[in-house]
Image 1: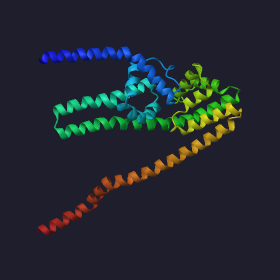
Image 2 (image 1 turned 30 degrees about the vertical axis):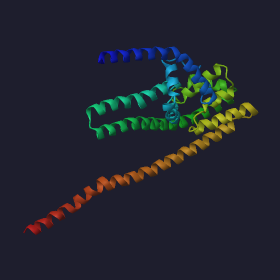
Image 3 (image 1 turned 120 degrees about the vertical axis):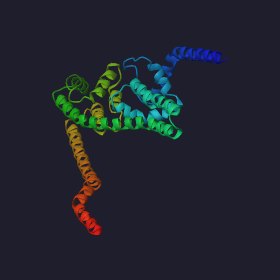
Image 4 (image 1 turned 90 degrees about the vertical axis):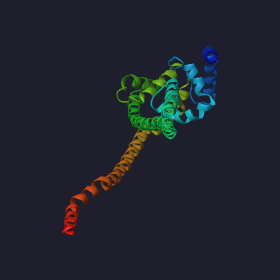
Length: 289
Protein backbone atom coordinates (compact mmCIF):
# COMPACT_ATOMS: atom_id res chain seq x y z
CA UNK A 1 0.00 0.00 0.00
CA UNK A 2 2.73 2.60 0.78
CA UNK A 3 4.43 1.75 -2.52
CA UNK A 4 1.21 2.45 -4.42
CA UNK A 5 0.74 5.78 -2.67
CA UNK A 6 4.33 6.77 -3.44
CA UNK A 7 3.94 5.77 -7.10
CA UNK A 8 0.68 7.73 -7.37
CA UNK A 9 2.30 10.80 -5.81
CA UNK A 10 5.27 10.55 -8.19
CA UNK A 11 2.97 10.23 -11.22
CA UNK A 12 0.91 13.20 -10.05
CA UNK A 13 4.08 15.27 -9.60
CA UNK A 14 5.30 14.43 -13.10
CA UNK A 15 1.92 15.26 -14.65
CA UNK A 16 1.81 18.56 -12.77
CA UNK A 17 5.33 19.45 -13.91
CA UNK A 18 4.52 18.67 -17.57
CA UNK A 19 1.28 20.67 -17.38
CA UNK A 20 3.16 23.61 -15.86
CA UNK A 21 5.75 23.58 -18.66
CA UNK A 22 3.00 23.36 -21.28
CA UNK A 23 1.05 26.28 -19.79
CA UNK A 24 4.09 28.46 -19.01
CA UNK A 25 3.90 30.56 -22.24
CA UNK A 26 0.27 31.48 -21.55
CA UNK A 27 1.10 32.36 -17.98
CA UNK A 28 3.97 34.53 -19.19
CA UNK A 29 1.72 36.46 -21.58
CA UNK A 30 -0.82 37.05 -18.81
CA UNK A 31 1.93 38.21 -16.48
CA UNK A 32 3.26 40.73 -18.99
CA UNK A 33 -0.22 42.06 -19.75
CA UNK A 34 -0.85 42.47 -16.03
CA UNK A 35 2.50 44.26 -15.62
CA UNK A 36 1.72 46.70 -18.43
CA UNK A 37 -1.79 47.40 -17.13
CA UNK A 38 -0.46 48.07 -13.64
CA UNK A 39 2.29 50.27 -15.19
CA UNK A 40 5.05 48.62 -13.24
CA UNK A 41 7.33 48.27 -16.26
CA UNK A 42 7.39 49.48 -19.87
CA UNK A 43 8.02 45.98 -21.20
CA UNK A 44 9.87 42.81 -20.37
CA UNK A 45 10.59 42.10 -24.02
CA UNK A 46 13.86 44.06 -24.14
CA UNK A 47 15.41 42.09 -21.29
CA UNK A 48 17.51 38.97 -21.97
CA UNK A 49 15.63 35.69 -21.92
CA UNK A 50 16.42 33.61 -18.86
CA UNK A 51 15.73 29.94 -18.25
CA UNK A 52 12.51 29.39 -16.33
CA UNK A 53 11.56 33.07 -16.51
CA UNK A 54 7.98 32.42 -17.63
CA UNK A 55 7.21 30.16 -14.68
CA UNK A 56 8.90 32.57 -12.26
CA UNK A 57 6.82 35.53 -13.48
CA UNK A 58 3.61 33.56 -13.22
CA UNK A 59 4.44 32.19 -9.76
CA UNK A 60 5.32 35.55 -8.22
CA UNK A 61 2.09 37.08 -9.54
CA UNK A 62 0.01 34.64 -7.50
CA UNK A 63 -1.76 35.86 -4.35
CA UNK A 64 0.52 34.24 -1.72
CA UNK A 65 3.58 36.05 -3.16
CA UNK A 66 2.32 39.16 -5.01
CA UNK A 67 1.86 41.54 -2.06
CA UNK A 68 5.07 40.47 -0.32
CA UNK A 69 7.12 40.81 -3.50
CA UNK A 70 5.52 44.19 -4.26
CA UNK A 71 7.01 45.53 -1.01
CA UNK A 72 10.48 44.17 -1.77
CA UNK A 73 10.55 44.91 -5.51
CA UNK A 74 11.94 48.49 -5.22
CA UNK A 75 14.85 47.23 -3.09
CA UNK A 76 15.59 44.36 -5.48
CA UNK A 77 15.37 46.73 -8.42
CA UNK A 78 17.78 49.13 -6.70
CA UNK A 79 20.46 46.44 -6.58
CA UNK A 80 20.44 46.27 -10.39
CA UNK A 81 18.83 42.86 -10.88
CA UNK A 82 16.61 42.22 -13.87
CA UNK A 83 12.91 41.46 -13.47
CA UNK A 84 13.39 37.69 -13.76
CA UNK A 85 16.52 37.68 -11.57
CA UNK A 86 14.72 39.69 -8.87
CA UNK A 87 11.82 37.26 -8.80
CA UNK A 88 14.11 34.23 -8.78
CA UNK A 89 16.21 35.71 -5.95
CA UNK A 90 13.03 36.47 -3.99
CA UNK A 91 11.62 32.95 -4.36
CA UNK A 92 14.89 31.25 -3.40
CA UNK A 93 15.87 33.32 -0.36
CA UNK A 94 12.46 34.35 0.96
CA UNK A 95 10.61 31.03 0.49
CA UNK A 96 12.71 28.03 -0.54
CA UNK A 97 15.46 28.59 2.04
CA UNK A 98 12.99 29.20 4.93
CA UNK A 99 11.04 26.05 3.96
CA UNK A 100 14.26 24.02 3.93
CA UNK A 101 15.27 25.51 7.30
CA UNK A 102 11.82 24.71 8.71
CA UNK A 103 11.98 21.08 7.57
CA UNK A 104 15.45 20.61 9.07
CA UNK A 105 14.65 22.52 12.28
CA UNK A 106 11.39 20.75 13.11
CA UNK A 107 12.97 17.38 12.33
CA UNK A 108 16.10 17.85 14.48
CA UNK A 109 15.40 20.56 17.08
CA UNK A 110 12.91 21.26 19.81
CA UNK A 111 9.68 23.05 18.94
CA UNK A 112 10.60 26.43 20.45
CA UNK A 113 14.07 26.43 18.89
CA UNK A 114 12.64 25.33 15.53
CA UNK A 115 10.01 28.09 15.66
CA UNK A 116 12.71 30.69 16.36
CA UNK A 117 14.82 29.33 13.49
CA UNK A 118 11.82 29.51 11.15
CA UNK A 119 11.10 33.09 12.23
CA UNK A 120 14.72 34.09 11.60
CA UNK A 121 14.76 32.33 8.22
CA UNK A 122 11.75 34.35 7.08
CA UNK A 123 12.83 37.67 8.61
CA UNK A 124 16.57 37.86 7.90
CA UNK A 125 16.44 37.56 4.06
CA UNK A 126 13.83 40.32 3.85
CA UNK A 127 15.85 42.49 6.21
CA UNK A 128 18.98 41.89 4.15
CA UNK A 129 17.18 42.77 0.89
CA UNK A 130 15.92 46.04 2.36
CA UNK A 131 19.32 47.05 3.75
CA UNK A 132 21.06 46.16 0.48
CA UNK A 133 18.48 48.17 -1.46
CA UNK A 134 18.89 51.22 0.78
CA UNK A 135 22.69 51.08 0.40
CA UNK A 136 22.37 50.76 -3.38
CA UNK A 137 19.98 53.72 -3.49
CA UNK A 138 22.48 55.88 -1.57
CA UNK A 139 25.24 54.96 -4.01
CA UNK A 140 23.05 55.64 -7.04
CA UNK A 141 21.99 59.03 -5.70
CA UNK A 142 25.67 59.96 -5.48
CA UNK A 143 26.36 58.56 -8.93
CA UNK A 144 23.42 60.54 -10.32
CA UNK A 145 25.34 63.72 -9.48
CA UNK A 146 28.08 62.59 -11.86
CA UNK A 147 25.41 61.76 -14.44
CA UNK A 148 24.07 65.32 -14.27
CA UNK A 149 27.53 66.81 -14.71
CA UNK A 150 28.41 64.55 -17.65
CA UNK A 151 25.07 65.20 -19.34
CA UNK A 152 25.49 68.97 -19.00
CA UNK A 153 28.97 68.79 -20.51
CA UNK A 154 27.87 66.62 -23.45
CA UNK A 155 24.71 68.59 -24.17
CA UNK A 156 26.68 71.84 -24.17
CA UNK A 157 28.88 70.20 -26.81
CA UNK A 158 25.77 69.77 -29.01
CA UNK A 159 24.68 66.19 -28.29
CA UNK A 160 21.05 65.19 -27.77
CA UNK A 161 19.94 63.61 -24.47
CA UNK A 162 19.67 60.17 -26.11
CA UNK A 163 23.12 60.44 -27.64
CA UNK A 164 24.54 61.76 -24.37
CA UNK A 165 23.19 58.81 -22.39
CA UNK A 166 24.42 56.36 -25.01
CA UNK A 167 27.92 57.87 -24.86
CA UNK A 168 27.85 57.86 -21.06
CA UNK A 169 26.84 54.19 -21.14
CA UNK A 170 29.89 53.27 -23.19
CA UNK A 171 32.51 55.61 -21.64
CA UNK A 172 31.54 56.18 -17.99
CA UNK A 173 30.91 52.69 -16.67
CA UNK A 174 33.71 52.90 -14.10
CA UNK A 175 32.39 56.15 -12.67
CA UNK A 176 28.82 54.90 -12.22
CA UNK A 177 28.99 51.11 -11.71
CA UNK A 178 25.47 50.82 -10.26
CA UNK A 179 23.62 53.55 -12.12
CA UNK A 180 24.98 52.40 -15.48
CA UNK A 181 22.55 49.47 -15.41
CA UNK A 182 19.60 51.87 -15.45
CA UNK A 183 21.18 53.80 -18.31
CA UNK A 184 21.62 50.56 -20.25
CA UNK A 185 17.97 49.84 -19.56
CA UNK A 186 17.04 53.26 -20.99
CA UNK A 187 19.07 52.57 -24.14
CA UNK A 188 17.42 49.16 -24.61
CA UNK A 189 13.96 50.66 -24.21
CA UNK A 190 14.79 53.33 -26.77
CA UNK A 191 16.13 50.69 -29.18
CA UNK A 192 12.90 48.73 -28.81
CA UNK A 193 10.98 51.66 -30.33
CA UNK A 194 9.49 53.26 -27.22
CA UNK A 195 9.03 57.01 -26.91
CA UNK A 196 11.62 59.03 -25.06
CA UNK A 197 9.11 60.05 -22.38
CA UNK A 198 8.31 56.43 -21.59
CA UNK A 199 12.00 55.49 -21.56
CA UNK A 200 12.82 58.38 -19.22
CA UNK A 201 9.96 57.40 -16.94
CA UNK A 202 11.42 53.89 -16.80
CA UNK A 203 14.85 55.37 -16.01
CA UNK A 204 13.48 57.21 -12.97
CA UNK A 205 10.98 54.56 -11.90
CA UNK A 206 12.47 54.20 -8.42
CA UNK A 207 11.07 57.14 -6.45
CA UNK A 208 13.71 56.84 -3.73
CA UNK A 209 16.38 58.04 -6.19
CA UNK A 210 15.55 61.72 -5.76
CA UNK A 211 18.45 63.05 -7.82
CA UNK A 212 17.67 60.76 -10.74
CA UNK A 213 13.97 61.66 -10.54
CA UNK A 214 14.84 65.35 -10.79
CA UNK A 215 17.14 64.59 -13.72
CA UNK A 216 14.34 62.67 -15.51
CA UNK A 217 11.83 65.46 -14.91
CA UNK A 218 14.25 68.01 -16.36
CA UNK A 219 14.97 65.85 -19.43
CA UNK A 220 11.25 65.37 -20.05
CA UNK A 221 10.67 69.10 -19.73
CA UNK A 222 13.47 69.90 -22.14
CA UNK A 223 12.05 67.47 -24.69
CA UNK A 224 8.54 68.90 -24.39
CA UNK A 225 9.28 72.62 -24.14
CA UNK A 226 12.70 72.72 -25.78
CA UNK A 227 14.24 74.55 -22.84
CA UNK A 228 17.94 74.54 -22.02
CA UNK A 229 19.04 72.18 -19.30
CA UNK A 230 22.47 73.48 -18.24
CA UNK A 231 21.15 75.77 -15.51
CA UNK A 232 18.67 73.15 -14.34
CA UNK A 233 21.36 70.48 -14.10
CA UNK A 234 23.62 72.83 -12.13
CA UNK A 235 20.78 73.46 -9.70
CA UNK A 236 20.13 69.71 -9.31
CA UNK A 237 23.84 69.14 -8.60
CA UNK A 238 23.95 71.93 -6.00
CA UNK A 239 20.82 70.64 -4.23
CA UNK A 240 22.14 67.07 -4.26
CA UNK A 241 25.51 68.14 -2.84
CA UNK A 242 23.78 70.16 -0.13
CA UNK A 243 21.64 67.14 0.74
CA UNK A 244 24.72 64.90 0.90
CA UNK A 245 26.46 67.35 3.25
CA UNK A 246 23.38 67.38 5.50
CA UNK A 247 23.33 63.58 5.60
CA UNK A 248 27.04 63.49 6.46
CA UNK A 249 26.46 65.90 9.35
CA UNK A 250 23.61 63.73 10.64
CA UNK A 251 25.75 60.59 10.44
CA UNK A 252 28.60 62.41 12.25
CA UNK A 253 26.26 63.39 15.08
CA UNK A 254 25.03 59.81 15.34
CA UNK A 255 28.60 58.55 15.60
CA UNK A 256 29.18 60.84 18.59
CA UNK A 257 26.13 59.43 20.38
CA UNK A 258 27.20 55.86 19.63
CA UNK A 259 30.69 56.51 20.98
CA UNK A 260 29.17 57.83 24.20
CA UNK A 261 27.25 54.58 24.66
CA UNK A 262 30.39 52.54 23.93
CA UNK A 263 32.38 54.55 26.50
CA UNK A 264 29.68 54.02 29.14
CA UNK A 265 29.55 50.28 28.52
CA UNK A 266 33.24 49.44 28.14
CA UNK A 267 35.59 52.27 29.11
CA UNK A 268 34.00 53.67 32.28
CA UNK A 269 33.81 50.31 34.14
CA UNK A 270 37.47 49.68 33.36
CA UNK A 271 38.35 53.19 34.54
CA UNK A 272 36.45 52.71 37.79
CA UNK A 273 38.21 49.41 38.39
CA UNK A 274 41.59 50.99 37.72
CA UNK A 275 40.99 53.95 40.02
CA UNK A 276 38.84 52.37 42.71
CA UNK A 277 40.40 48.93 42.76
CA UNK A 278 43.34 49.75 45.06
CA UNK A 279 41.01 51.61 47.44
CA UNK A 280 38.62 48.65 47.64
CA UNK A 281 41.54 46.30 48.29
CA UNK A 282 42.82 48.56 51.07
CA UNK A 283 39.38 48.65 52.71
CA UNK A 284 39.06 44.85 52.56
CA UNK A 285 42.55 44.47 54.04
CA UNK A 286 41.60 46.83 56.88
CA UNK A 287 38.47 44.83 57.68
CA UNK A 288 40.45 41.57 57.72
CA UNK A 289 42.84 42.98 60.32
